[in-house]
Image (cartoon, rainbow, N blue to C red; front, top):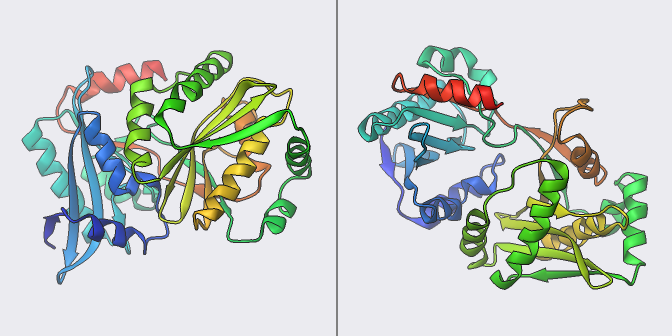
Length: 330
């Protein structure tokens, strides 16, 4: 079936308004963000009788390990069919060969295990890199605030109410880039304490600039006795809110619980039906590095979502050096 370039934002956004499995990585602005990082992007559509049946965003990532094409939570289909999937992959392969990249990396929103034979036949292999989370948590916030609270874990509900009654905890909501350094400092302190590598300030700044221009991003900052102690960076898109970045420097006061509650209420005000907590650990894995964060998120309720594991398609032999380096780091 014909594959076309998609230059019309409305066509792109309207397609995803009808797709249940969607995240902000499918948004038009995510492509704009990738461009702001210096990535070349392609927005493509697979058509059938003039109607778009699949959309996919391709980003060319330049890396010392070797350039590659990235499809994040992409391709998306109204209904996945084997022939359609093959057509999309062949188009991406043509671009990869023309751009002389080392490999193609796909972090699909659907589970590639359902199509493992097909992907294996096409030459894909499991990636050594975890590009985006394979498991997430999504809360239905179309219910009343009382119903949302009643469905939470008892301890979470208690800490939210405790936070509400603590006059020394203040939550502010900001759309100003001027407040981003406050959030980033909190995130750096959190990363140092918990032992993870945060995104660069440049990365977060560009993401905030792109999405906040159209009121699709907000910072939630919590202070205690005048000192900032927690924060959250949310993206609002297509009736969903996404808790994409977070920070907390102390658990002595329930600031993080109160931030999430205020963010949920703000998402409802903006007409969102779902609140996505983004990454959680695999179920029943108490030793996973996200185990504590997952326990925190699950306290608010919600349904677990399973995304596909990242898969790679080698284009040149140089890919295997990348594979070895990433495997060693993992």
